[in-house]
Length: 99
Image 1 (cartoon, rainbow, N blue to C red):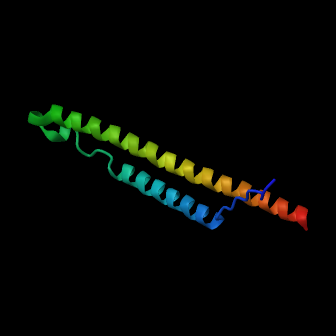
Image 2 (image 1 turned 90 degrees about the horizontal axis):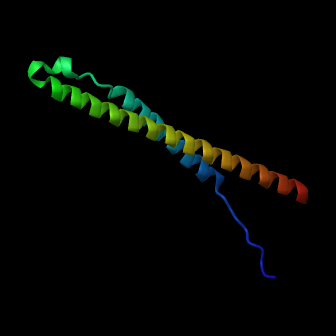
Image 3 (image 1 turned 180 degrees about the vertical axis):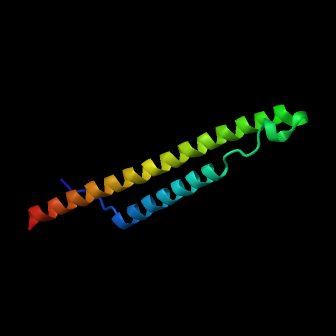
């Protein structure tokens, strides 16, 4: 029947990738908070009020998108850690059954 297929997972590498996703999520979240609009129609002055409001709306959309990106990165990190934990538990159970 041939050789059994073996799968190997470098759990340290998976944890490192998860850490990087978490770090990116934190930086994106921080950038989104730091970029909160301080410029709007009122501060643009009468001549540029509409442009200021349009800019504010555009920046708010961008901030919302960056926040979603940060949440997605945090979710990816959590999924990687969860998968690694399940793999580690399965490996431990298999080793216990052999010995």
